[in-house]
Image 1 (cartoon, rainbow, N blue to C red):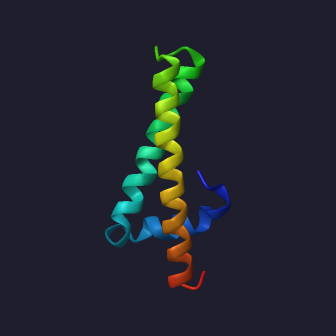
Image 2 (spheres, rainbow, N blue to C red; image 1 turned 45 degrees about the horizontal axis):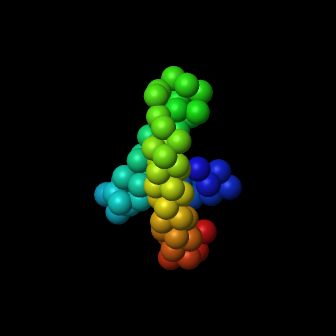
Length: 78
């Protein structure tokens, strides 16, 4: 997720207490990514509707994480 911000994400992870909400979003996004991949590969039975729902949730989390990253970047002059 947001690989172009890998350095900033690493920086945010180092200060877990201040970025707990971001880390929760980040972990949930990765969990959904794994679940979606398993559903698409046939390793986990998911209907098309369930898969679509997971993808929408994942995208929403990505948008929220992106906003947090941009704000963090601005606040820390990164």
